[in-house]
Structures are given as C-alpha cells and as structure tokens.
Amino acid sequence: MRDFFARHGVWILCATAVVAVTLSVLSYFSATSSVFHDAVGVVSAPFRAAGEAVSGWFEDKRRYYESYNDLMEENQALREEVAALRADARQAEKDRAENARLRELLDLRAQRRDLVFEAAKVLEHSTGNWASTLTLNCGTKHGVAEKNVVVSSEGYLVGIVTEVGTNWCTVRTIVDTETELGAVLFRTGDVVVAEGELALMGENRLRAVYLPDDATLLIGDYVLTSGLGGYYPSDLVIGTVERVEADDNGYAQYAVLRPMVSFDDLTEVFVIKEFDIVE
Image 1 (cartoon, rainbow, N blue to C red):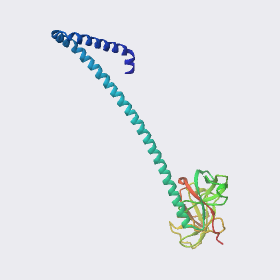
Image 2: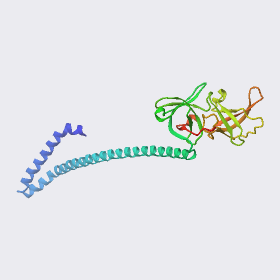
Image 3: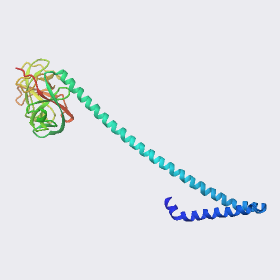
Image 4: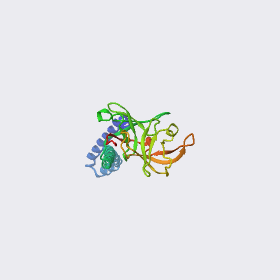
C-alpha cells in the first residue's frame, strides 16, 4: 500500500485539486441561474460522489493504520507480559525446589541430630568396568574431607568421599568394587560385611558376606551400617535383601542387597562431615 501511494500519490492529489476547482467554479455559476444550477448539480454529482469516496477511502485507511498500530502495541505489551509471567513461573519453580531441599535437610537433621550435614548437588554420574562414582559440587571450602560419608535426602547410604578439591569431590558409591563396610541385619541383629562385587555392580547391587551359619534371612530384610570401625555412622540404611546365593565353592552363603537409592537418578545428596563414633 505504501508503494501504491509512492507511485500514484501525485496523480491522486492533482485529480482531487481539479475536482475541488471544478466544484468551486460550478458553485459560483450556479448562484446566477436556477437552470444552470440544476445542470451544475447533475454534472457535479459524480464529482461529489468521487470526492466523498476518496475522502472515505482515506479515512478508512487512516483508521486501519491507527488500529494496526494499536494492535501492534497491544501485541508487544502482551509479549512482555507473557515473558514476565514465564520468568515468575521459573523463579517460583526454583523457590519450590529450594524449599523442598531445605525441608529435606531439616527433616534429616531432625532425625539424626548426631550428624553434621553439607548439602551438595550431583554434577556427574560415572560407572565404568571397575568403579561407580559420583562428582559433587562441594569440597574443602565447604568443610568436606576424604572419607566423609554421603547419604540421600532420606538418609539412605550413597557412598564415601574418596577425593576432594576446592569446590568438588568424588564419591565412591556402595556398589563400587572397592566398597567394604561393617553392616548389621536389622531384623536379626546379625553382624555382616557389605561389599561391592564386580559381577553385581552392573546390576547396581552389592552383597552381604560372612553370614552366620544359622542366619535366617527373609527377602526384604533391611541391612544397616553397624558403625564399627569409625568410618561410617551407625544405623544408615544400606539396602534390602533381594536374594540369597551360595559362593563359588558352594559352602558359604551371601545375600544380594538392593540399595535404597538409584545412583543414576540422584541429583542432590548430603555429606556427613561429623558424627559420633561407635566404640
């Protein structure tokens, strides 16, 4: 439309001027003769109609562009409003996540007042042929040290810190082949050893060995940390008994344990920096 006016605008203005002059002349002569007045009315009628049409057309276009500009401004305002609402929604989601994390930490601290926790986010999950580890976003500047124990938000055992940097640390999970810790069967009180095993690591499992000969295990029995040795706090849930199998010699039995946590799904954990040692 702008191109049309650029090409034909001069001709439209000239035609309008001619019509206006013609109407003025005819109006002058029409004042001296009624017959001529009638003739002028007949002759000028199409010009008046054309002038009104042109005027109406320009008025319609003016209103159209005003309406278009109003719509564009309203559209921009709506876009800005939507952007602001989305930003508020994202912030609200972050606030909810932060509140949930704080509630979990408060609940965990209320349950285990003997432990000192440091919250951490999981940066990386790594499972190789021989190792299963996590990388966290906390380190020495947060008071984290090697051999600190790591648990989930529910207080379930995840693993132990094996390497520490300024703002990061590596955690060896309980299914890693290097894992070995004192454990106790919750239902019977039998003391055993929980350890990682190469064949089971791929299943995300570990095992309980040195079972008493008269041990009566049930599927689903809880296995907890014993706290003996001073490396792990006591009464942390390691996992549950999934099945009982015989060793390669066929003499001794061991229990396959299912951890209480899914390491690949962990996004946040808690490092235990201090705890009461069981003598």
